[in-house]
Image 1 (cartoon, rainbow, N blue to C red):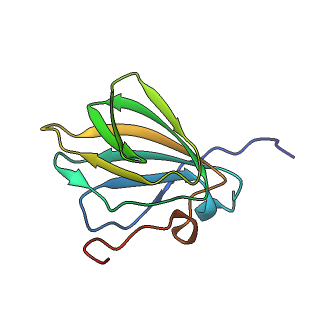
Image 2 (image 1 turned 30 degrees about the vertical axis):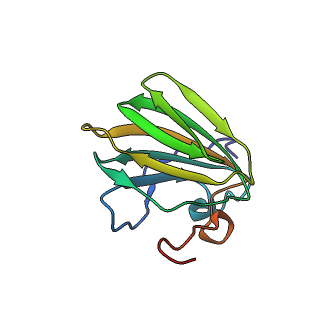
Image 3 (image 1 turned 180 degrees about the vertical axis):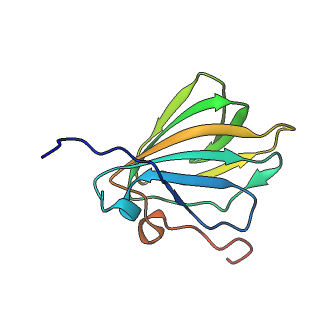
Length: 123
């Protein structure tokens, strides 16, 4: 019995905002303790604030990505990485003119139920 698995067909998460999300490991593969995703955020992309129940590590492959973390704005560029602890209020965006390619690792795995996205425009 092999003690490894190779991922040939990542799960493409359906989106409506132009962002590509390829989940290589995570809840889609029965790996609930970690998720690893390759993502491409188009220029001008953003998503609502969220307060996840997981730690998230992000590594920027190309372009830039903006993070609003508990009211502080941080911009990462190619070759930089960040770890954001669970419970932080975060808003991810790419207000820059080029797409941003990056890897994301969540511990435990990302799930729609544990990300707690806010509904924009609702108080």
